[in-house]
Length: 140
Image 1 (cartoon, rainbow, N blue to C red):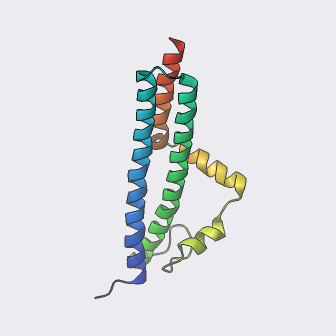
Image 2: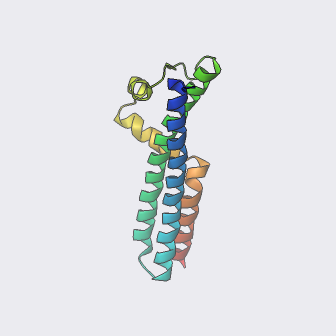
Image 3: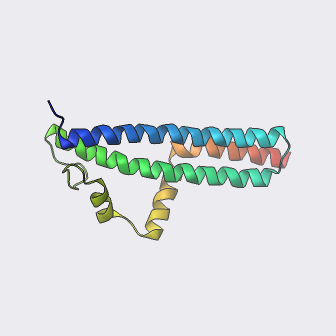
């Protein structure tokens, strides 16, 4: 039996969603490595803090992309279950980019979306804690 277009799209997007989670973890691990290396080799704390901020924002951007996939997955799950879309957008298969273009924010909206993601606890905890450690090192 052939899977429906919605089921095929769901499988592809679910794999992509999981992949984004793995790479987000790698960004967090890179942050730990950067701070550890800076402490071990007694490098400039302010430069290290800047690198940690860049990695934090990169993770937020990455998680923003993942959240767009999540919205589409929820639409497809509603389609496959025979219910209404929770977001009100089309649930027809293969409309990921079309739906995004219809709701895409402008430049300021995109930056605000990235910053909202950066403040989510699962995104903010590792780099926030690492920046606090770097600040402690700077003060001692």
